[in-house]
Length: 260
Length: 284
Ligand SMILES: Nc1ncnc2c1ncn2[C@@H]1O[C@H](COP(=O)(O)OP(=O)(O)OP(=O)(O)O)[C@@H](O)[C@H]1O
Ligand SMILES: [Mg+2]
Figure 1: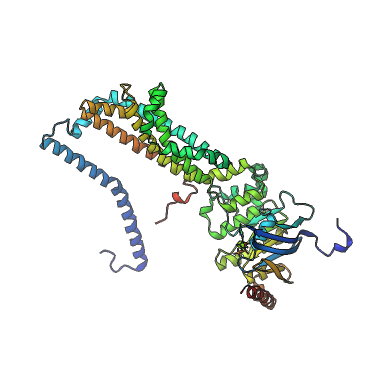
Figure 2: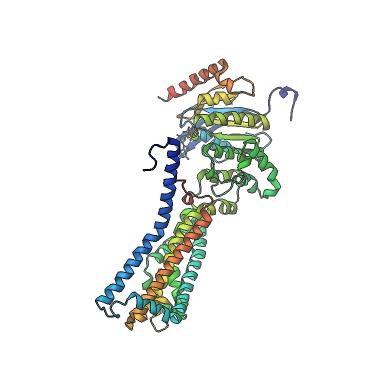
């Protein structure tokens, strides 16, 4: 597969070509969406409400199928290639933390004992190994989100989809989780597509920001944040951060402007 | 007040202590007050009957009822056992029938479309109207009564379970889909646990209804001298103006009702206390 020309270039993981998605016949949620996701990307989808960010994620996750266009996985999509984190933690309230994390394996018929190591490792990654026996209602909002992330990562997916995962959290918790997410990615190195409303969150986290506009949902610009990882809290006050944020804001303003 | 002049830190302790004490008082009052009310009512009743010399075939005194409870125990206890068995069996079959029907309905739209109207018809038809028919078609009075009680009890379980089975979180449903869950896995690991609180709510209602169904069935079916359980005993006692026994039977029936409610609440608590919001004790 690998040829000499792509040694420095990262391999493509997923390609969406000419995607069009209509709902109920005439609502165009996405029009002519073309997106190539490379291995190791931390890509943010940034855009106003209703521009089709969630729809794009649901298409990639296979929960929706496009009206036209194709989504191609490099090397085909395997069983454990995908992890998803929603805006809500989406835990099973009747199951303990460790059993919630077990779910992806359980649905593949794997016993708890056979994947105990992976489950504990995933909980360790999000710093919740001491809470493995707790029930979701005993956890704070941020901790629940961590469990949700552990569950998404437990199968070591090639691609992690996150749909505004921290939008419902307070700012302090959100910053903490932003940093921890970067550390996590550093540790296990998966590709991430991250949906957000927040320019600042997208700049802090990602190396690629794709800005979308609504009606019809489409991509109107892309921006690279060429600041190497690991990024620390100090990055938030650096000039690179400020300039990237203002560039992203400009594209976003354009997206909003077109709506009115 | 003894707290006068004490520094604020100890004032908090005092406040805490006061609240502790109040909680303790409340706990005792929870039992004491209803008991006192009962005592006064029974005492007043006894006094009225004694002083006004009310004849026992109009209003028996609590003392007489107590005596009847003891003297007729050999007759009342078997009757209570029959009514108890009737109620519990009806409830058991209602659980089996209601739950499996609910699962069938939610697994297949077609089954639901075809069958649900009849489940409703069965429910809204008063049992009293069906009981005489059942008596004709079914030889055993016990089985006929059981059918009646079952008919009354199963609907709340059915309708609650249907709502519950459909109430699973949408994102969780998506997650199951993403991980390629089978239909059975979705039912076992998602729909059934989601339905549990709803099912248990239905169970509480069904427990009371099963007893009501059993009593009504006994009234209607047990009349032909086939004396079934407590309700039949009660009816017979009323024909004979044996009001002591009538009241004794009535008391036993309501004791059974309370016991069933208590049992269902306990079952519900046991299943939910670890994880469900309804069983969450707020720290005061
Ligand atoms: N199941 C559906 N049926 C009909 N229309 C839908 C459906 N899902 C989404 N849409 C429409 O598609 C458009 C894009 O929706 P989508 O949820 O993808 O937006 P979004 O960018 O995620 O918005 P938000 O930031 O508010 O989550 C919206 O106009 C929405 O009304
Ligand atoms: Mg969305």
